[in-house]
Length: 71
Image (tube, rainbow, N blue to C red):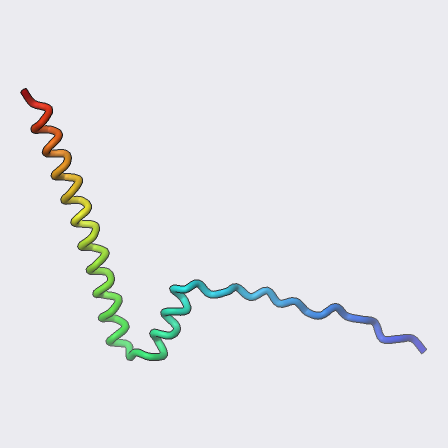
């Protein structure tokens, strides 16, 4: 009688979720859809405000340099 062949243990490679993915999963469990949408809209507004502020600062610098460069 032969011994049963030994099978290696199955190794399963699962990706560790990113912090953002995990946060969204928790958020979906805790909040209703309307609150999620409101939070995302608020965050998008923050990002847009930051972009506008950066553009404003760059424009002010360009104007100062153009005025300072004239005799």
